Image (cartoon, rainbow, N blue to C red):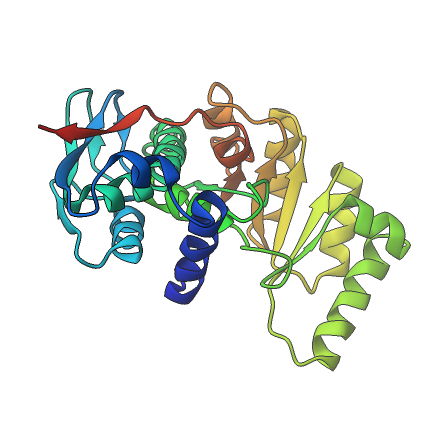
Length: 283
């Protein structure tokens, strides 16, 4: 995934507006304007660190005079008691940025940690872990960034950068053949170069997709291990293959061993526990 700096700047601007509005009145009320301080990001739980670059940009957006000193980088394995970074400068500015930094880093680190666990389950295999569009509205960019930091791969970012013909598209279009042919015509007429993925709900649909052609990847949705193996043999490398639907940390290696190229896991971003991190003042 290519991070757009302008999109990241816009996210930070909007997030600060949401949190600060016309001022951090608690800090303004009890901390002198000239007061300075230092704070450290304390790791309180083991995992994979993510969001360091985001934190740096947030602090600089709040106050360009803040000094940000990183001790770790995104992707580092962390343990309880580690210090990720130190920030120094205006006490009011540090407190204004604190919650946004923690919200981003805790969630991103939780996603990176979970993704790393899934990736480790596939060690030695060629199958890649994919995320999905099951993300938090407005936070998708950072969540998908965290997946990459954890060792996973990004599926399409949104509705605009890939064609994904799912069950409802097929039903509304009048069937697989019609959906694929209409899609091919649409891409040609609009001079769009987008990859096409089609969801299959059973072996009969896999056969129909293969017979129709003009696609890049077949998603095997909620297939059993046996069905997945049969589908991979039938597809025989003509198209990329992706397993999806209810796949867990306990079952993911078995699906990968069926020979699929990708496994998409919505839980990477929509069913996640944030990592415990804390920003503590240094006295």
